[in-house]
Image (tube, rainbow over all chains, first blue to last red; front, side, top):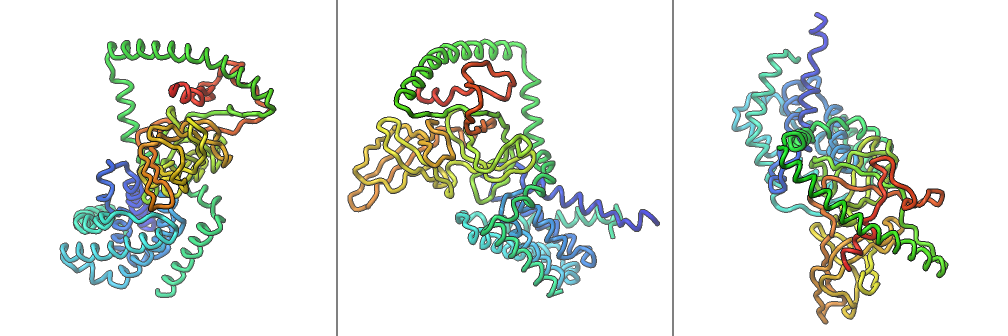
Length: 162
Length: 291
């Protein structure tokens, strides 16, 4: 029972760390805009799947880490992630039952919200306005979501993360 | 639940205000970035593997060619350097006569650029030297061809620098041809010179050197080359664009500069001992290239 009591949390940590690495993974200049919001997707997945233990505190802490990595004002990504995780928590039972395309659509709209909050807060802290293709990440997030969802779900079941 | 959200949002807002407005969180940021340093290195891993392969999977012929080329280069640079020693001491004597000291040489350290995309809204780079190596915020960074930018955040083993062409960065410069002084601000791609009258004597192709007036950057390093001068009588100021001479987008090694300290021995009088503490000749080299 000892292994059970640990709930295999390391799977969660590992997935979040990989999301952080992918967030700063070097891409060619032209592909910059098509980088998905990895941390948002992974955090949303755990918030849907394990809503009883993956709460706002996680979103807050991992948002801070993303801020430190990206050199943005501390608290910027925490703010955006907390808002998204809150909405996900309110609807997690419904989202779980959605077919994949509807989940993707939901994640697309949540990504738009997330990107908008990040953009507003960056503008407030004096960063220049990005090009219109900044919003393209929302579409990529939506397309990527079903695959990421299946992958993380299988991992969660295999390692019995509860 | 809603109270939790409210608290999280209030805490993150307070953090943002403290960080952005007052800069109270520098030590917290330093700690978090230090803990997260492995993430930078992991993201940089493919790049590392590629450069390892570049270094190790080379034919003997290529190495011999490279060796020959480097030897030629060293010979040419050495010959140039001989001239510089003379010029340097002559310059020193003349300045002593005028009673003005010009402090050019401090300590130097080569740093490697980590190939990660860690700056979404700014033009910045992460380098692999940090507070443990004595790097400090505001330190000047140059590469072989000119000024690159300055350090903005420091963790124990990495630091973040802002590039010259970032819209929030400006550097005091002077025209090498006639000494006209200006402020060069970034615009995301290149630099533009602010608030210069239409009558100013700056031409296309002029080399702009750092003037040292802001006391952030040492004096006399090449900064940019003027690429276009537009003078319209309807506009109050001339529109002058300049391109950084440093390889801002391609550099993989940069040089960190420390301000000169009086008790340090002159670096021309001794050979550099540690491979990383190098005597620097590109200060003057940029000028020599120009001649």
